[in-house]
Image: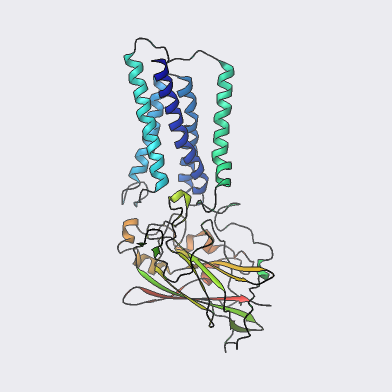
Amino acid sequence: MTIKAQSLFYAAAASTAIAGIIHLMLGPNNFAFNQNQGILFVVGGIAQVFWIIPMIRRWGTKWYAIGIGGTGVFMTIFFITRIQGNPITGRGGSINQMGLITEIFQAAFIVLAITIMIYQFRSRNLAGFTVKSNKKQLQYLIAIVAIVILIALFVIPMAMPQPMGGPPRGGPPGMQPPIQGQSETNLKNSTTQITPLLQSCTLTPSLIEVEDTPQQTEGPYFVDGMQNRSEIFTDTTDDSIEKGTPLNLTINVYEEKDGSCFPLSGAKVDIWHANYEGVYSGVFEQGSVGKNFLRGYQLTDSNGSVHFTTMYPGWYEGRAIHIHIKVRTFDESQKSEWTSQIYFPNSINEQVHSNLPYSLHGHPDTPNERDGIFVGPSTDGLVESNTGKHLMLNLINDTEGYQGTFNVVIKGN
């Protein structure tokens, strides 16, 4: 009985510890998107890791019951928020890999704790169910719990390969300080000189007062080394096809010199964005590591253009609907890059998300004017506020979906 009892207690402690560690890892990443959710993850995660002590020290049925109840509340909230139109979030959501793993360990803790209570209730001999007082041992255990909490909150997230979800380190989205020197970014190429276009370099949508296109934060979801492909709505790891409204996207890249625009050929243009459920591929917290849907790059042609066939992006909490873009050139001496985001009109976002499959995820919760990155300054110092107004996609509706055009103007030497 003693060995069996010890096994039950240690297994229960391990189960609640793992569930708590996962919550602590994901908690800080949720603050910028949903403060209440971030607080829930962190506080709940600390409580779950703390419950190592009542289980190993065998504090008694009252403590086990509290642990069961608290874990049950966590599981109930999780499954309620998966239901479309639920009273907590007002929308639904899929069960991702990390969520499923967490729920399995929480369920395991509940089963083990209930089993312990049953054994303790039925057993007249409480050997194995109580522990003699040992203050030094308790102090060591408290120290171990504190270390586990700190590792889960800080060490593991920093050690994980990026992206793992959440806002960029150093502050919430839209609040990063300008990156020194970015306004002097130069994108060079070794191609022959191209005849300039017969127009000024005010090509970007809504951009009048500055000549080159403002940059924005890369965000936490960039994954380098994606495939050179124009059709990015498939996932090459399993040949699955993302659902949604087709979007044919043309991006034109120009280099500005002396007030004239030259097409920038041979530049590498990466784009990446969320699917209709607000999920990115290659993201740890969303259980999509190794996937590559809605990601890819193209090299600009002699006209400075690339073309992508994708699906209209979905939304996730705290962000307006957007596409990330990165333009890079490589020569023998240096790598240069330009990074920003592309936005969509609110009215079209609402229209698209009223239809399947987007409606299963609910209407977008953050219009452009409430997005901290959209209304914030550019990271290169070109624009002091409302940077997103200069980064709007030019959209045309057609019979199959949307045609989008976006022009990038980059200051040359």
